[in-house]
Length: 239
Image (tube, rainbow, N blue to C red; front, side, top):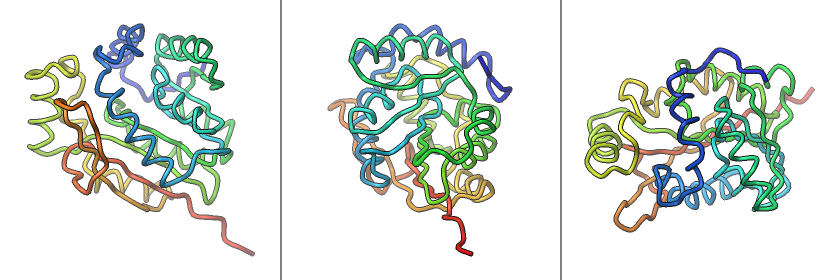
């Protein structure tokens, strides 16, 4: 097991404790189940999945990783929550889906597998770590020149506080209380700056809107709450 240091023990404990319920579509991970089709469509449309070697950073119980594998990608999923990784492995076996799950930090993996992935995804994870900029550096080291990176997270503003924290966690019970800390939410400009500093180019920013009433999500132009970002590592310069 290789864990690195860029993690919050309280966050890991929280996700480990909830791991057995990861695949319950009506449980505490219900919003992730509902968001997953829209997230998959965005990734597939922007970067393509069939035949590509993909790394899912912060894979949790494997919702996205399995979805990408079903679309023909060769997927490796990494996380530091041991319980979530175990649930992901067991579910993949039961579903007959081939995903390589590992308990390892992105920063550690970047040292041993630099530049070998066609696509790196990191969804709903950056707002849970102490140093998200360091994750972007590791991701930039993991993706090949010319390869793609897709991240998603939550904007930091009064609207996102009202909807993603007060509404989702306290009024409607869509997420457990304390799932998100407002100070750790990330503005698109901050994420784009960290990506640029890591050597990635911003290709696209898109909103991810979710209706609790219909349990449907859609990609839009409104990045004020949940949003997706598509980056690319520049191709190596020709000699």
